[in-house]
Length: 66
Image 1 (cartoon, rainbow, N blue to C red):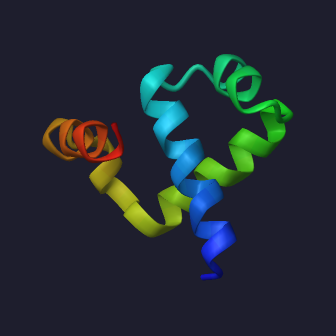
Image 2: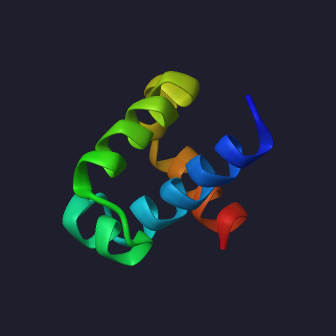
């Protein structure tokens, strides 16, 4: 994955966690269309799979991305 793509996905995941998955708020925070958030989070889910539903993983991601 290209570094700029990885950075966008990281930024999107950080905002997604901060706004507790509320796509409209994430889109507003990132100045992108909600569909862009949906696409990016789809990519993140491809990479992380079911781990994003594990509370321990989510907590670790929040701390790591803070």
